[in-house]
Length: 351
Image (cartoon, rainbow, N blue to C red; front, side):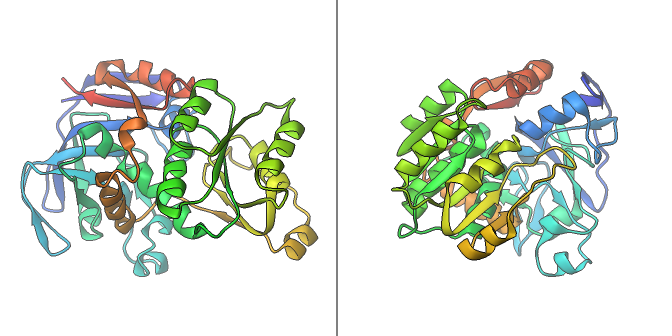
Protein backbone atom coordinates (compact mmCIF):
# COMPACT_ATOMS: atom_id res chain seq x y z
CA UNK A 1 0.00 0.00 0.00
CA UNK A 2 0.99 3.66 -0.20
CA UNK A 3 1.76 5.55 2.98
CA UNK A 4 3.33 8.88 3.93
CA UNK A 5 6.13 7.79 6.26
CA UNK A 6 7.66 10.32 8.62
CA UNK A 7 11.43 9.70 8.82
CA UNK A 8 12.45 12.75 10.84
CA UNK A 9 12.13 16.55 10.90
CA UNK A 10 11.12 17.92 7.46
CA UNK A 11 11.39 14.41 6.03
CA UNK A 12 8.16 12.71 5.03
CA UNK A 13 7.97 10.43 1.99
CA UNK A 14 5.11 8.75 0.17
CA UNK A 15 6.26 5.19 -0.42
CA UNK A 16 5.10 1.61 -0.73
CA UNK A 17 4.95 -0.29 2.55
CA UNK A 18 3.41 -3.66 3.44
CA UNK A 19 -0.29 -3.68 4.19
CA UNK A 20 -0.56 -4.02 7.99
CA UNK A 21 -1.03 -7.55 9.25
CA UNK A 22 -4.45 -8.31 10.69
CA UNK A 23 -4.28 -10.48 13.80
CA UNK A 24 -6.84 -11.74 16.29
CA UNK A 25 -6.53 -8.53 18.30
CA UNK A 26 -6.58 -6.02 15.43
CA UNK A 27 -8.88 -5.04 12.58
CA UNK A 28 -8.12 -3.33 9.28
CA UNK A 29 -9.52 0.06 8.33
CA UNK A 30 -9.45 1.42 4.78
CA UNK A 31 -8.82 5.15 5.11
CA UNK A 32 -11.28 7.45 3.32
CA UNK A 33 -10.07 10.76 4.73
CA UNK A 34 -7.53 11.97 7.27
CA UNK A 35 -7.25 15.53 8.58
CA UNK A 36 -3.91 17.33 8.86
CA UNK A 37 -3.84 19.09 12.21
CA UNK A 38 -1.31 21.55 13.56
CA UNK A 39 0.20 18.76 15.68
CA UNK A 40 0.98 16.80 12.50
CA UNK A 41 2.59 19.89 10.96
CA UNK A 42 4.71 20.54 14.07
CA UNK A 43 5.88 16.93 14.16
CA UNK A 44 6.68 17.04 10.44
CA UNK A 45 8.80 20.16 10.89
CA UNK A 46 10.42 19.57 14.29
CA UNK A 47 9.75 16.03 15.45
CA UNK A 48 8.26 15.33 18.88
CA UNK A 49 9.42 13.65 22.06
CA UNK A 50 6.76 10.92 21.82
CA UNK A 51 7.21 10.21 18.09
CA UNK A 52 9.91 7.71 17.10
CA UNK A 53 10.48 7.60 13.31
CA UNK A 54 9.84 5.91 11.05
CA UNK A 55 6.10 6.20 11.70
CA UNK A 56 2.94 7.09 9.78
CA UNK A 57 1.27 10.20 11.18
CA UNK A 58 -2.42 11.15 11.01
CA UNK A 59 -5.06 10.71 13.73
CA UNK A 60 -8.18 12.50 12.42
CA UNK A 61 -9.66 9.52 10.64
CA UNK A 62 -12.69 8.38 8.71
CA UNK A 63 -12.55 4.98 7.08
CA UNK A 64 -14.31 1.73 6.21
CA UNK A 65 -13.88 -1.34 8.39
CA UNK A 66 -12.94 -4.44 6.40
CA UNK A 67 -14.62 -7.05 8.61
CA UNK A 68 -17.55 -7.21 11.02
CA UNK A 69 -16.73 -5.82 14.47
CA UNK A 70 -18.51 -6.25 17.80
CA UNK A 71 -18.36 -2.93 19.65
CA UNK A 72 -20.45 -1.66 22.55
CA UNK A 73 -22.73 -4.70 22.29
CA UNK A 74 -23.57 -4.15 18.61
CA UNK A 75 -22.14 -5.35 15.33
CA UNK A 76 -20.61 -2.82 12.95
CA UNK A 77 -20.80 -4.43 9.51
CA UNK A 78 -17.88 -4.69 7.13
CA UNK A 79 -17.86 -1.72 4.75
CA UNK A 80 -19.38 0.61 7.34
CA UNK A 81 -17.83 4.04 7.70
CA UNK A 82 -16.47 4.84 11.12
CA UNK A 83 -14.73 7.72 12.84
CA UNK A 84 -11.86 6.82 15.14
CA UNK A 85 -10.92 7.74 18.67
CA UNK A 86 -7.13 7.55 18.28
CA UNK A 87 -6.38 6.66 21.92
CA UNK A 88 -4.71 3.31 22.62
CA UNK A 89 -4.96 3.06 26.43
CA UNK A 90 -3.51 0.44 28.75
CA UNK A 91 -6.98 -0.34 30.22
CA UNK A 92 -5.55 -1.13 33.68
CA UNK A 93 -4.39 2.15 35.25
CA UNK A 94 -6.65 4.14 37.60
CA UNK A 95 -7.61 6.62 34.89
CA UNK A 96 -8.58 3.88 32.46
CA UNK A 97 -10.64 2.20 35.18
CA UNK A 98 -12.57 5.48 35.48
CA UNK A 99 -13.08 5.74 31.73
CA UNK A 100 -10.64 8.66 31.45
CA UNK A 101 -8.73 7.01 28.64
CA UNK A 102 -7.22 10.29 27.42
CA UNK A 103 -5.34 10.48 30.75
CA UNK A 104 -4.00 6.91 30.64
CA UNK A 105 -0.65 6.53 32.40
CA UNK A 106 0.78 4.50 29.49
CA UNK A 107 -1.14 6.07 26.64
CA UNK A 108 -0.26 5.33 23.03
CA UNK A 109 -1.94 7.10 20.11
CA UNK A 110 -2.77 6.31 16.51
CA UNK A 111 -0.70 8.59 14.28
CA UNK A 112 1.87 9.35 16.94
CA UNK A 113 3.22 6.33 18.79
CA UNK A 114 1.33 3.88 16.53
CA UNK A 115 1.04 4.07 12.72
CA UNK A 116 -1.79 6.37 11.64
CA UNK A 117 -4.01 7.47 8.83
CA UNK A 118 -1.78 9.00 6.15
CA UNK A 119 -1.96 5.66 4.38
CA UNK A 120 -4.38 3.52 2.41
CA UNK A 121 -4.95 1.22 5.39
CA UNK A 122 -4.42 1.34 9.13
CA UNK A 123 -4.80 -1.36 11.77
CA UNK A 124 -6.98 -0.69 14.81
CA UNK A 125 -5.78 -2.29 18.08
CA UNK A 126 -8.29 -4.13 20.24
CA UNK A 127 -7.99 -1.51 23.01
CA UNK A 128 -9.76 0.98 20.76
CA UNK A 129 -12.53 -1.52 20.01
CA UNK A 130 -12.94 -2.37 23.71
CA UNK A 131 -13.41 1.25 24.75
CA UNK A 132 -15.94 1.95 21.98
CA UNK A 133 -13.50 3.99 19.96
CA UNK A 134 -15.04 3.08 16.58
CA UNK A 135 -18.07 5.32 16.02
CA UNK A 136 -20.37 4.82 13.02
CA UNK A 137 -20.50 7.86 10.77
CA UNK A 138 -23.99 9.31 10.19
CA UNK A 139 -25.13 9.32 6.57
CA UNK A 140 -25.49 13.10 6.73
CA UNK A 141 -21.71 13.54 6.90
CA UNK A 142 -19.20 13.28 4.08
CA UNK A 143 -15.85 11.60 4.63
CA UNK A 144 -14.01 14.90 5.05
CA UNK A 145 -16.45 16.09 7.71
CA UNK A 146 -16.31 12.72 9.48
CA UNK A 147 -12.52 12.99 9.68
CA UNK A 148 -13.05 16.12 11.78
CA UNK A 149 -15.28 14.42 14.34
CA UNK A 150 -12.14 13.75 16.39
CA UNK A 151 -11.20 17.45 16.72
CA UNK A 152 -14.85 18.23 17.45
CA UNK A 153 -14.73 15.65 20.25
CA UNK A 154 -11.60 17.32 21.65
CA UNK A 155 -13.44 20.64 21.63
CA UNK A 156 -16.35 19.01 23.46
CA UNK A 157 -13.91 17.96 26.19
CA UNK A 158 -12.95 21.61 26.74
CA UNK A 159 -16.58 22.70 26.41
CA UNK A 160 -17.74 20.21 29.06
CA UNK A 161 -15.06 21.30 31.53
CA UNK A 162 -16.10 24.93 31.25
CA UNK A 163 -19.81 24.09 31.49
CA UNK A 164 -21.07 27.33 29.95
CA UNK A 165 -24.66 28.48 29.76
CA UNK A 166 -26.46 31.49 28.34
CA UNK A 167 -26.57 33.20 31.73
CA UNK A 168 -22.77 33.43 31.91
CA UNK A 169 -20.69 36.44 31.00
CA UNK A 170 -19.44 36.51 27.37
CA UNK A 171 -17.01 33.94 26.02
CA UNK A 172 -13.72 35.01 24.44
CA UNK A 173 -11.86 32.55 22.21
CA UNK A 174 -8.20 33.42 21.68
CA UNK A 175 -7.17 32.00 18.32
CA UNK A 176 -8.71 31.97 14.87
CA UNK A 177 -7.84 28.51 13.53
CA UNK A 178 -10.09 25.50 12.91
CA UNK A 179 -10.28 24.53 16.59
CA UNK A 180 -11.21 28.08 17.58
CA UNK A 181 -14.01 28.12 15.01
CA UNK A 182 -15.30 24.73 16.13
CA UNK A 183 -15.43 26.16 19.67
CA UNK A 184 -17.22 29.21 18.30
CA UNK A 185 -19.99 27.04 16.89
CA UNK A 186 -20.34 25.08 20.13
CA UNK A 187 -20.74 28.23 22.21
CA UNK A 188 -23.07 29.96 19.76
CA UNK A 189 -25.30 27.04 18.81
CA UNK A 190 -25.39 24.96 22.00
CA UNK A 191 -24.55 27.26 24.92
CA UNK A 192 -26.21 30.25 23.20
CA UNK A 193 -23.67 32.65 24.65
CA UNK A 194 -22.18 35.82 23.24
CA UNK A 195 -18.79 34.99 21.75
CA UNK A 196 -15.81 37.04 20.61
CA UNK A 197 -12.88 35.77 18.56
CA UNK A 198 -9.41 37.25 19.03
CA UNK A 199 -7.07 36.38 16.15
CA UNK A 200 -4.30 37.39 13.79
CA UNK A 201 -5.18 36.09 10.30
CA UNK A 202 -7.58 38.39 8.37
CA UNK A 203 -9.15 35.59 6.30
CA UNK A 204 -9.82 33.51 9.39
CA UNK A 205 -11.19 36.47 11.32
CA UNK A 206 -13.65 37.13 8.51
CA UNK A 207 -14.58 33.44 8.55
CA UNK A 208 -15.35 33.75 12.25
CA UNK A 209 -17.56 36.75 11.56
CA UNK A 210 -19.47 34.84 8.89
CA UNK A 211 -19.97 31.93 11.31
CA UNK A 212 -21.76 34.09 13.85
CA UNK A 213 -19.14 35.60 16.14
CA UNK A 214 -20.65 38.52 18.02
CA UNK A 215 -17.35 40.38 17.80
CA UNK A 216 -13.95 39.80 16.22
CA UNK A 217 -10.72 41.44 17.30
CA UNK A 218 -7.39 41.46 15.50
CA UNK A 219 -4.18 41.72 17.48
CA UNK A 220 -0.44 41.43 17.21
CA UNK A 221 2.40 41.96 19.65
CA UNK A 222 2.19 45.75 19.23
CA UNK A 223 -1.57 46.03 19.77
CA UNK A 224 -2.24 43.85 22.81
CA UNK A 225 -3.16 46.80 25.07
CA UNK A 226 -5.63 48.20 22.54
CA UNK A 227 -7.18 44.79 21.89
CA UNK A 228 -7.54 44.15 25.64
CA UNK A 229 -9.42 47.45 25.96
CA UNK A 230 -11.68 46.55 23.01
CA UNK A 231 -12.46 43.16 24.53
CA UNK A 232 -13.21 44.86 27.87
CA UNK A 233 -15.74 47.07 26.08
CA UNK A 234 -17.31 43.95 24.51
CA UNK A 235 -17.75 42.37 27.94
CA UNK A 236 -19.27 45.51 29.43
CA UNK A 237 -16.14 46.03 31.53
CA UNK A 238 -17.03 43.00 33.68
CA UNK A 239 -14.64 40.67 31.88
CA UNK A 240 -15.20 37.39 30.07
CA UNK A 241 -16.85 34.51 31.89
CA UNK A 242 -14.87 32.00 29.86
CA UNK A 243 -11.62 32.36 27.91
CA UNK A 244 -10.55 29.52 25.62
CA UNK A 245 -6.90 29.50 24.54
CA UNK A 246 -7.04 27.85 21.12
CA UNK A 247 -3.59 28.90 19.98
CA UNK A 248 -0.08 27.68 20.74
CA UNK A 249 1.12 31.25 21.25
CA UNK A 250 2.26 31.42 24.91
CA UNK A 251 1.34 35.11 25.06
CA UNK A 252 -2.32 34.03 24.94
CA UNK A 253 -2.42 33.07 28.63
CA UNK A 254 -1.14 36.46 29.76
CA UNK A 255 -3.71 38.08 27.46
CA UNK A 256 -6.47 35.89 28.91
CA UNK A 257 -5.66 37.09 32.42
CA UNK A 258 -6.24 40.66 31.22
CA UNK A 259 -9.71 40.08 29.82
CA UNK A 260 -11.19 37.51 32.23
CA UNK A 261 -13.78 38.50 34.84
CA UNK A 262 -14.38 37.39 38.41
CA UNK A 263 -15.54 33.83 39.10
CA UNK A 264 -14.45 32.86 35.59
CA UNK A 265 -12.56 30.10 33.85
CA UNK A 266 -9.60 29.95 31.48
CA UNK A 267 -9.05 26.77 29.47
CA UNK A 268 -5.68 26.01 27.89
CA UNK A 269 -6.94 23.97 24.95
CA UNK A 270 -3.89 24.14 22.67
CA UNK A 271 -0.57 22.48 23.37
CA UNK A 272 2.47 24.73 23.68
CA UNK A 273 6.20 24.24 23.48
CA UNK A 274 7.67 21.89 26.07
CA UNK A 275 8.76 23.59 29.27
CA UNK A 276 6.70 26.74 28.70
CA UNK A 277 6.44 28.49 32.09
CA UNK A 278 4.06 31.21 33.29
CA UNK A 279 3.96 33.56 36.26
CA UNK A 280 0.63 34.30 37.93
CA UNK A 281 -0.33 36.31 41.01
CA UNK A 282 -1.72 33.79 43.50
CA UNK A 283 -3.76 36.48 45.22
CA UNK A 284 -5.29 37.50 41.90
CA UNK A 285 -6.42 33.90 41.41
CA UNK A 286 -7.67 33.67 44.98
CA UNK A 287 -9.56 36.93 45.40
CA UNK A 288 -11.11 36.89 41.94
CA UNK A 289 -12.02 33.19 42.17
CA UNK A 290 -10.38 32.30 38.85
CA UNK A 291 -10.07 28.73 37.59
CA UNK A 292 -7.41 27.75 35.04
CA UNK A 293 -7.89 24.37 33.41
CA UNK A 294 -6.31 22.28 30.70
CA UNK A 295 -7.97 19.83 28.35
CA UNK A 296 -6.38 17.10 26.25
CA UNK A 297 -7.89 14.90 23.56
CA UNK A 298 -11.29 13.34 24.31
CA UNK A 299 -13.05 10.07 25.08
CA UNK A 300 -15.12 7.70 22.93
CA UNK A 301 -18.30 9.04 24.52
CA UNK A 302 -17.38 12.52 23.35
CA UNK A 303 -16.73 11.19 19.84
CA UNK A 304 -20.23 9.72 19.85
CA UNK A 305 -21.63 13.08 20.95
CA UNK A 306 -19.61 14.77 18.22
CA UNK A 307 -21.18 12.55 15.56
CA UNK A 308 -24.69 13.46 16.73
CA UNK A 309 -23.91 17.18 16.98
CA UNK A 310 -22.33 17.27 13.51
CA UNK A 311 -25.21 15.32 11.95
CA UNK A 312 -27.65 17.90 13.35
CA UNK A 313 -25.45 20.71 11.96
CA UNK A 314 -25.13 22.29 15.39
CA UNK A 315 -21.49 22.33 14.36
CA UNK A 316 -21.03 22.47 10.59
CA UNK A 317 -17.72 20.77 9.93
CA UNK A 318 -17.96 21.40 6.19
CA UNK A 319 -17.14 25.04 6.98
CA UNK A 320 -13.86 23.96 8.55
CA UNK A 321 -12.54 21.92 5.60
CA UNK A 322 -10.93 24.40 3.20
CA UNK A 323 -8.25 22.30 1.44
CA UNK A 324 -8.28 18.74 0.08
CA UNK A 325 -5.18 16.90 -1.15
CA UNK A 326 -4.20 13.48 -2.43
CA UNK A 327 -1.73 11.52 -0.34
CA UNK A 328 1.05 12.24 -2.85
CA UNK A 329 0.79 15.93 -1.89
CA UNK A 330 1.21 15.38 1.85
CA UNK A 331 4.08 17.87 2.07
CA UNK A 332 1.93 20.54 0.43
CA UNK A 333 -0.83 19.78 2.94
CA UNK A 334 1.66 20.13 5.79
CA UNK A 335 2.88 23.48 4.49
CA UNK A 336 -0.69 24.69 4.03
CA UNK A 337 -1.31 23.85 7.67
CA UNK A 338 1.84 25.38 9.12
CA UNK A 339 1.38 28.48 6.94
CA UNK A 340 -2.11 29.13 8.39
CA UNK A 341 -3.71 29.00 4.94
CA UNK A 342 -7.45 28.46 5.16
CA UNK A 343 -8.60 26.25 8.04
CA UNK A 344 -8.27 22.45 7.87
CA UNK A 345 -6.56 20.48 5.11
CA UNK A 346 -7.74 16.90 4.57
CA UNK A 347 -6.07 14.04 2.72
CA UNK A 348 -8.86 12.26 0.83
CA UNK A 349 -7.29 10.50 -2.16
CA UNK A 350 -4.97 7.56 -1.48
CA UNK A 351 -4.33 6.04 -4.92
